[in-house]
Image (tube, rainbow, N blue to C red; front, side, top):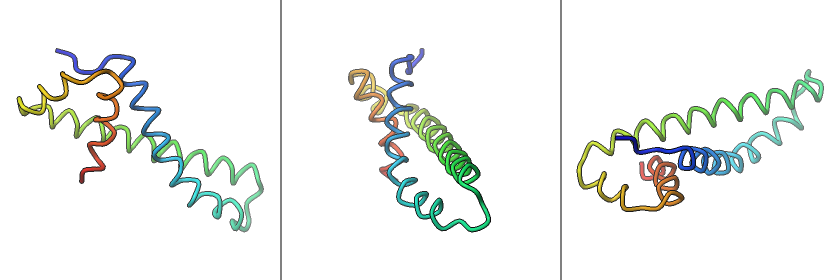
Length: 98
């Protein structure tokens, strides 16, 4: 049985990127401004690389730990009763509970 369709995965990826982006902007903008020894292209590439790396880790761990939580029948029933957007939000919000 599959728990994730394309709409759920895409929405969860978008929500996780938005949740991570505000943090990366708060940390990354000062890094871009005060990084000595790097030109602007290198600074922007570094920012994009960090953002994509941390986003892929966040999204991957969210999917992994959410999938582990679906082993319990109660959690599985609650998840299957949700709509697609609510399912995506529950995937991303799963790590926030820790």
